[in-house]
Length: 302
Ligand SMILES: Nc1ncnc2c1ncn2[C@@H]1O[C@H](COP(=O)(O)OP(=O)(O)OP(=O)(O)O)[C@@H](O)[C@H]1O
Image: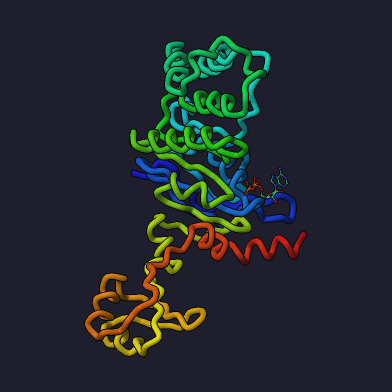
């Protein structure tokens, strides 16, 4: 069962179409990375999912219902869009208690989410004095108050140190492992590589890719092998079912055969190899390739 459904979503600001006929699903039990260059429309889409912006066209449902039709929204979907939106003079405990009470949630949830996010020790401290990492934890604690099945985080690791980034990544994964649907936005593919199971990539408000992480790697050239030899070898590779194209400096770029198969083939024909390297496309390269057009368009328009 899909938890968040986005169908034909469009948002116009004046004559600007910032989200353009976007459709995708966020499934339970996995982290869906929501990627796009700056200004692609990620935050606007997230705002529409939780009813903070009204779609010009299209529909978003959470657990089959529109946000405005959810009796207690916090129990269906938790969202962290801006971690700085905390009353600085309040303690972490009071901030969460105010949210719990105004949403009709039991007070015990406050202690539970403080424990879950490792904030018990600072519950009585004013949030205004928190580091960015602590503030993110507090924001995440708030999203969990209603124990929702769906969670949305907008650029949660922005500005964090490596330890903070690691903590957030592990936390996202643990939420998905509990069967929740987790949507996390970022403009950096490398951040998603270790977190997301599935990717939704947008550019200029439009869907560019909607696929599993492994499929994305594959679609962008993962699985080729770089081969170097001074001897004629391409015909043997082709005869064995491989596809060969010329790489840089006389190298052969082979697809359709594994490096093990190529090594055995070379040994069989007595062809000495000076290089045999499986190629892994970096996710960052794949992302830049996918979004190139939308970034160029923005550059030209600016
Ligand atoms: N309230 C608004 N009024 C007019 N334009 C807006 C409004 N909110 C966003 N935009 C524009 O919509 C476009 C998409 O913005 P959005 O913040 O959704 O992108 P994003 O993918 O989240 O980017 P970033 O990673 O930079 O936050 C931008 O060009 C932005 O200037």
